[in-house]
Length: 180
Image (cartoon, rainbow, N blue to C red; front, side, top):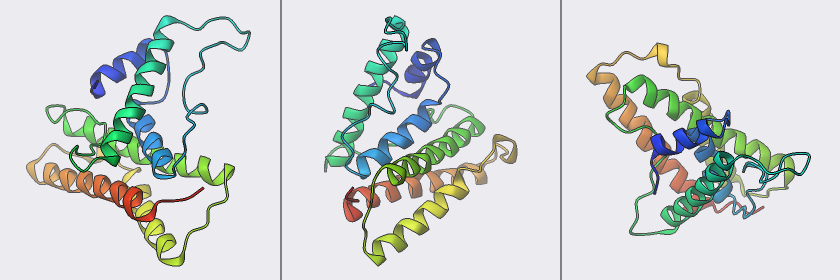
């Protein structure tokens, strides 16, 4: 599987404007909602005039399809860990925090797309849990690199946030099983 840096490189060569962490957040939300079609998320294989797109865009599209498969396998597996697609730990904290913010924004944006296109019926306890998690994700999505200083205490806080987002995503996927 490609890591964040590899996928970001493909994304940039394809001239796509959405960060790969944001893509992954949306992909995770779609998987949590049992959405099988990612056509509205993936770059098109043809231009508006039906001409072919660049080879870079096709490579990026194929990499995203692989990411969808890998993420689905991670969420469905009891043996593979589910991991957020973010920069490696050796990257500066500011870069990792910005990517986590974008990941959460993608997850929230994905929910907006799902709600606008579908009718979702959840029981009260599921709605309460979802509401709490999405409020938290919304707060995390406001992180800015300028508000973080690279100190050990903030590194630990980031690790706790990362684990909270990871576990919350698994909880939504496993326990709530949003039906659309």
